[in-house]
Image 1: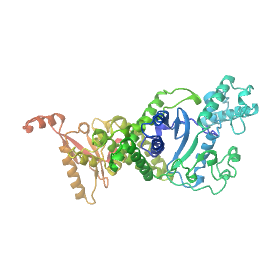
Image 2: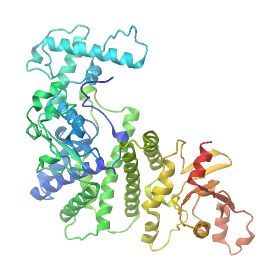
Image 3: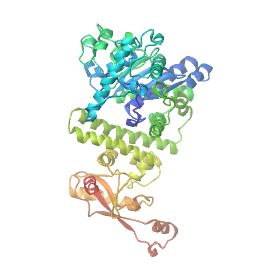
Image 4: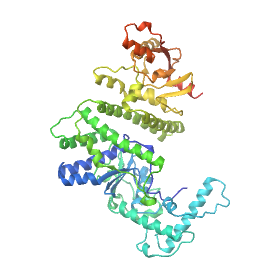
Length: 547
């Protein structure tokens, strides 16, 4: 149904995570507010603790994210990563913001409250039925205008609450509930809140009055006539340079801003301590992880439909500022399991986002658009599946069977967190994968169980690749902690030219033999036999899996 006004209520959390650009912009805004209140009131003040307890961030409901104070909206934030640098490139998003800020009733929200008896006579296709339904909604909205409930812009009139006229074909009780809850929702959400438009690239100022841009609907032309900025309406884009936030932040500048905020907050919460860049990065990973876990819980709630309220009173869980400050009050200089988990999370998610950005670049330029759109969806789906089954550190350990846990531990984690290998071997494989992946394995049949990896074999000459493969084999054969790999028949690796590897294999100890090797000097007397695992290129594995 092609509605004229988009609903203000839309849950899009399944499409993103706490480590992407949108999640990090939300973190930046939260940290900036926390630091400002810290600097003004002090860490141990009653007012600062009240602030932490009352403020929260709500992701992907009314807007991409919103800041709330005791349930009421303080600010609404829309985020566009890469969407063009001209004002005209963003007219659709600006129109959506204006419709919400001006409290226009949408067709979708109308349907959430009103049961319509639509006559579908003569409609044979889904498109025809949707169009007939939309026409019916518009008829009812026009009748509401005639009765004086709403004006020509679908906004509530000043005396809507005093009108008792019935609208033909609309249950009066349902109509009263719609209007009452819509009024309450608008009052709590838009009346006192600012709207901020965040982008990774600068947006040029309008070159003509906003009402003259193509895509601005007739009902918004009067409100935007003669305007070159929407700041007077409490809507801010990057060229408005509001004092509240930096609205134009590239990926790298966003990380710098977040790290600076973390550093400044730590000067209050852990006063007197000094932190390296790696340690600040680790704190950032902890915060992104909290957001990511919150989003995962939101996904679960969507699947199970466990939300409070209905219609405009339906609510989504928010993330309290108390949760965001908590990791910044704990000294994590000790390189323990939590530290390495965060390091692995940072590296994996950076590699993932680089690959997503690459695919989006192709999609936006219509370069094999269908193929790359499918790849992006597969990547999002399989990332979610994999991270439901493994912690980041466990995932990277299993993807790197050629790296053996050694001392110093930092060297081992440096080896398994190579972003290039994660992208070229693992992500480039799962972006093509429609099959279900379980414990990093894809089972075709009993004779073909493929195990993914982050192994990349390079070399311009065949003898150079043979040498690299020889080293990989030797290292895997020494690694006796590869339980999941021992259940596989093939190990997928990336080679520079994706040549045939099907005749190459590595021998691994079985579990029994591994125990014998640790407990006796007479290892050669063991009766258990080693297993052979064949190598397979990414291309070769995909060919076998898709057969």
